[in-house]
Image (tube, rainbow, N blue to C red; front, side, top):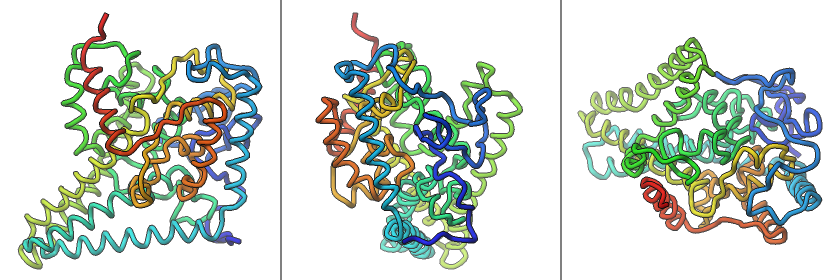
Length: 419
């Protein structure tokens, strides 16, 4: 079996920094996390900086329409079945999983090195295409299959300080800790709850009919098209939580602290992609301008891909949204149900799943955000069978269909609702 790294984190530390209905602290609360991200607030009296809590029994005030046919007992049993799926993976993970993530990291770094090396001669068209392609793929893999999943704590159990949610800083402008706050904590707890999940439209888009229409939403398609190639910068701005500063929930001193952190991260990203690589290419072969265009292209392609994959996770037709009364009194089983009917998967090849960071298995990721991503494909078979048996929708389709569905909704909701 996998041996603990004695130089890494202690074995007593929890295995996740993602919000999930864990059983480490009380009947429904998640384990005590190791670190507190910027802007993260502790629940009064709980000692656990995780928003919200789950009821031990009963049901929410109103169940979502897609789950209205389920009784409390059925939801509780569904929860136990999904717990069993999770526990099986936790019991089996070991050497093979550890070898997988380490191999992915080695190949990603080799791709990035090879790409930047090719760009030293970027004036040559073949070198430019090869370098840009390798660097684009390397950035996508780092963001999707490595960074996103490491920051969810999926590999913390290895106790490797170099592959750990508290130490990993990804190749993305937004700092890891800020993203863990808005994504791991808030989005994964309040998935698709209008008024609580700030990821519903990211404060700029209308992506659900229950969001009141405003004249500015006419620009929905334009904003979304402009957001795609600069997605990492949009997320960095979003993670500053400017809307919370406006309402007084976040202080100006906290904002200034976060602005400084983002500035430092942005400077590092600029230095690596828009200074170091082009300058080296200029000195060696006079290819500085071509190398600069290549690194900008690689970042743009990575951003467009990440935008497409992430928007397919919750915005296609059929992905449910929820009112606050639907989560009032929510149990562990109800939380599971909401993740399943509020998320959408992408069908495709193993290569496609890998390049999405296995977020093509968005349903499974939202059920089990702290399980190793390489296990989602096998888990998906069981989850789909459970959905069918309990009469719950399992939203899945090829990439072009899910992307088209998402864009169709964005165009439609840009217009006022028909009366």
